[in-house]
Length: 236
Image 1: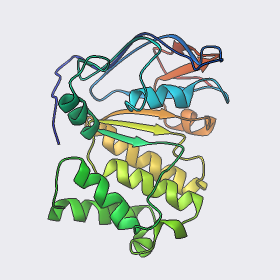
Image 2: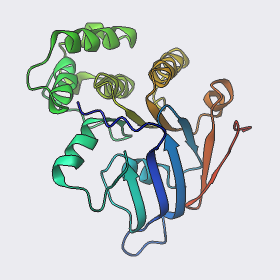
Image 3: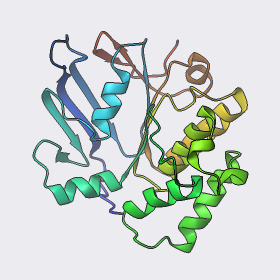
């Protein structure tokens, strides 16, 4: 995996970012955002506020309709294909649409993601990391089961393992606790916090007010596509 190593610079920068789809009003409207290495940000807001669209843009799955998105100092609109691949290798993304490969086992779904992130042969330490994360999230007994056999909550936890096993520089998680009970919710948040303490930049979209109250970090509120960022702690 490539390490971009920006010291003091913005890892994530959005300048006047808007997004709309044909025949629709703006989903995002002139969003401004800057995050540095080791920052943690909640993205909060009601259904349809634009949270998933914002995180999809950060994960390089889409480009904005207008404005500029830079990751690790590179403008996504003009970056070379090879640099874009390196950027993607440095991201861990937990989408709402989990997208596991149904015919592969749980372990294989995670291992293939790690391999695509820059290692053609799974290293011993990578295998150990995957097994550790599966165990922490109650999935050790499922590692050889087909992904198609998982419940929604289990599939969501596999997606988290897949993102964290890559040891990303940026972790982007879209409602990662939405299908979890309270115990696994806090286990997931503990993993995110541990990653953040290790200098990973973390962006979590959530509607869970208890998480925001208990794990207190800065928040960005999206409402009708407009963003307001709390400089301090959110007081939902």
